[in-house]
Image 1: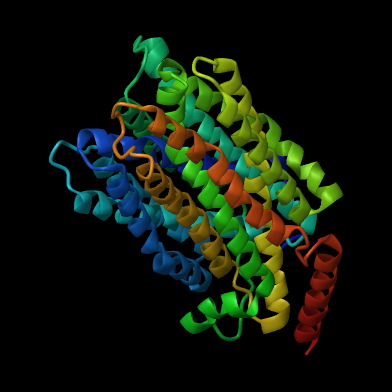
Image 2 (image 1 turned 180 degrees about the vertical axis):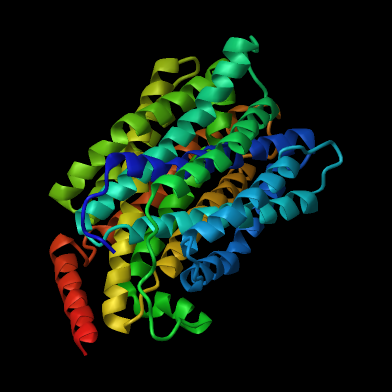
Length: 452
């Protein structure tokens, strides 16, 4: 594990798979639920439940993949092997998942969600872990995470921009359907993922995990949550943070298209959110140098809260207000995407110092799981909340009570959720000074072991 800065061109190549992976998350979170509601006739509550159950399977598969990738020995690098295997599996599931028909059942949705998430995770977790192993330096890890998460936001940008260009500008469809948007992004994902993974393999150096005398057992893997208190605190806060975002993304098409009556501008609003994230996400990297990662994470969540409040007061037809809110949101989201994985890598060092075992893959698996679980549990929260206001199926007639429910679900509900992670993380125990101490102790231990 080197402490030397990596060349920018290598970090761009490292970030490339994140573009495809996160582009596909946009329809999964925003457009696919209404597609299954409208095309297959499922209620939003049933769709939300299927997504939540699909994520529940990852409570096992995510840590399993992380642990197995830690143990994998290959001259090609342990992370590459898993990414190569997961790519075709994710592509196969995408085909079936994005082609529902009138007779599609909840079981069909659940089956292909599970297969898709398995393939996606086989790429995502080793990719995240690889980044944590490229450097042991506190600030360089933030830089690596910054490149990767900027790639993620480029993926979000593509998920909004590609349908906008293809469907509205090239094909002249004024208000593309959710189904058309999903299909277009699916094609982009199928083309981009294998190309991006190949580029990453060619340009990014292999980073082998720290060899251990004894491999961590399955029991040891889950013991991470008990013994590594800073990590447990981090992922607890991150789960609630992602629940808030998942709730908003679930309801975003509804508030923009139906409450604000901006159906023709749905992709444009999503595009401004992502452009702001892409352009402004790098700003958070120098901010972490001044405030520390944990305080930066809290400030970024506060910025996101402001964006939700703006949506509550936006009036029908106010495109400028919807764009402003989403630009502010994109800026805030940049900080909440970059800092958690960088902090997680620091807690791995803390855990190694305490336990003598380095489990980067296992830790990153838990980070990936809470990210996806929160984003998937958010739609269930949103659908359940909307049902209390009588809004149960996408496209149904909107009355004042349903409109109020959508507004609250897109604003004050996620705001209330975000208070919790801010309180949890404001005084996080691992800052730059503490991490430097941990790294010194680890280096001394390794030198002593090598000399003995």
